[in-house]
Image 1 (cartoon, rainbow, N blue to C red):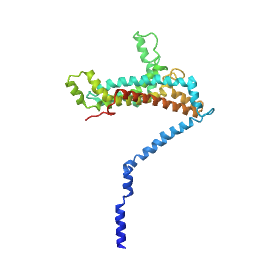
Image 2 (spheres, helix red, strand yellow):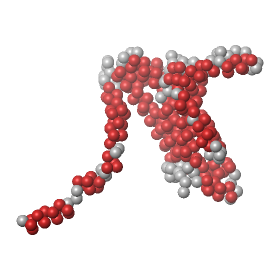
Image 3 (cartoon, one colour):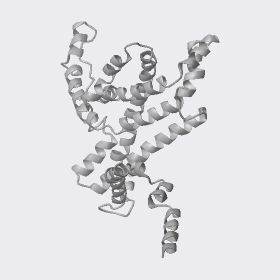
Image 4 (cartoon, rainbow, N blue to C red):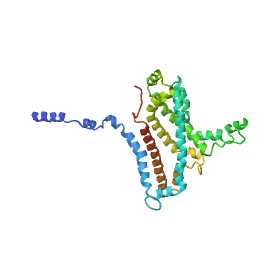
Length: 304
């Protein structure tokens, strides 16, 4: 009996425990901490997307692809893609063009945190509050037009709200902090000794930017462009509050909202949402393809 007991004990010691087996498969205690986040992602993102995708192929009338055929055959729907692109692309380019030089300047300042706080303040205001401020300041009777009229620069108020320019200005105000923070993080991640070495060798600022900063920043700027574009492409509050939602700023998100909550056609609204996601994905793929054509270096930069 003692021999059998000792033999079984040795076999148990030799066999790996369940904890070791799970750890070998990558399922240790730390990995299991990701389970709540994974469930949250499935419940709030993956499941709604799959549900909407399936629902888009279940139109009220017609065949399986009736919603998509209706969208692209009706200019009232199809033109919303071009309208949204005309807003999102210029806003993204303008925010990135402003963020790059400002971030280069801020990284050299001693009170960087204080200035950064002021620059990102619009994030805390929210889209609705920014729109209300624009109506007050840039409206026909706002201080901006009154000041220009008082100075004799204009004779009639300049229309800066309830049109395309109102949405553009609103998205620049609310989207710039996000673009700026991402750009600043990439710029400050570049080792300063690289620039100092180039300056020692006689490289001018333009040459240093072109040969040092640009190759290292390009991967990050491509990601920043894509994230900023997706944020601007989903514009809804600005297009309604300071835009012209029935005409010049009838973006694709408004079309989806009207189909869902005015026409109560959730299948059509889901199809519009899928088209919206597909058009965003096309732009993202074009950006990354363009980046690969001009730069094939490492995908990230950092100090050291």
